[in-house]
Length: 293
Image 1 (cartoon, rainbow, N blue to C red):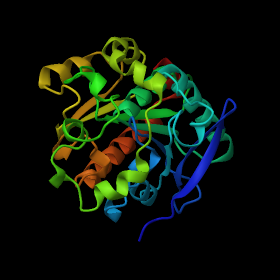
Image 2 (image 1 turned 135 degrees about the vertical axis):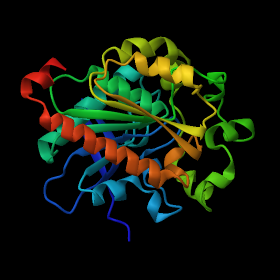
Image 3 (image 1 turned 90 degrees about the vertical axis):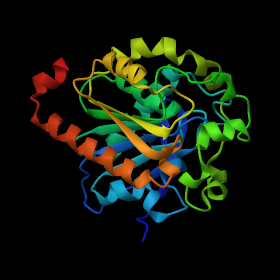
């Protein structure tokens, strides 16, 4: 039986952001997991409908966490206010403002944990890099590296068929029956400002990585086709992070859209295990150590 997941809106500097919210049974959560979807998707990506076991929101709430899956700025409720979307810096500003507002009205436990997929992974890292003060436990990123494996203009060419469909999904057998039909409502146009910035991530990443000072976990799917994820590329990417802890995981029998595939439960369990590790580290640190980090 699915745990209730409801729609939510948050105000962020005059912009309304929409999303999905799942709460634990306990009055106070262990932490708040903030999930950020990729390009051309929406928050429901993390609440897969093809199989009850796919939902990150359901699983994390069962484990005692609040889960907030946001429609990134330019998607969902903010699409009319931001018809061209925003670059990463602007998205990060609004996400941080939305989370500050959320914390004023909801218990947050040990703090926030950011989980981002694909272009949402860029935003998770950028938001962590721009974070000030305490309250951020760690970052979990999938579906992205810092080197494109293909011409990134394919991502913004407006199609999800033929070769582009293979880049997004990989072998179709990796997904439960009904996935593509049920995923149709999750698809949304990529805003133009976001699309124009897509190709610049390899140049932007080093400066972002140097400012990320919380633990980071990077996961690479076996059938990832958008991004280079050979050992040398991944090792160099991880080395640029200023994070006190960096974990790298690889997931077999998995395509780019990890959270909609058959291995989603495994990925989500591993992400929650990393959240718990980050929470334990955070609670063992003194306030002075947290400030120094």
